[in-house]
Amino acid sequence: MGERADFGTRFIAWLIDYVIVGVAVGIIYGIFGAALGRIRGIGGLFLFLAWLLSIVVVFGYFIFFWTKSGQTIGKQVMKIKVVTTQGQLLNYGQAALRVIGYWVSSFIFCLGFLWMLWDPDKQTWADKIAGTYVVKA
Image (cartoon, rainbow, N blue to C red; front, side, top):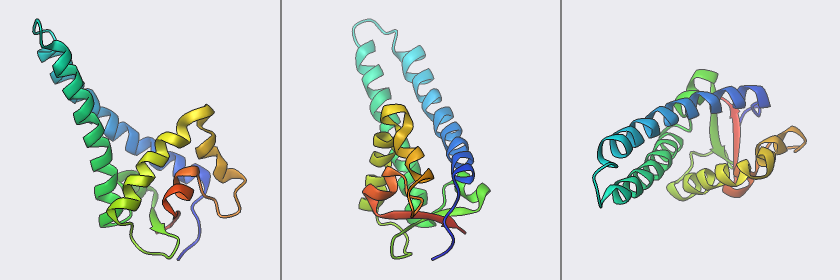
């Protein structure tokens, strides 16, 4: 299956991915919020649509890459990948659970991400929720 990725490598991969996702979400809010959100009477609807589209983009980004190669762009750069505990690529359900696990992991001072520092399998809460490991590619 491969050697587990360390915290620093995973953190840098996460930063790269969140810059990419953040730019995409920023563009969505820029278009819907600034341009369309000012239309009297329906501005709130456009902001809701921007929020909904942002959720789709975040889920879509991670699910696409994790199910196709196990590597998001950040993970490709850092030469690590996500696999199931059996060493396989994730299916769509596992990938969706892992995205939800990212949000859960960010609660309470990002304790779920820091968990890997003392976990014997170097798993975050997202890994435990989805049944995954992050290994060197």
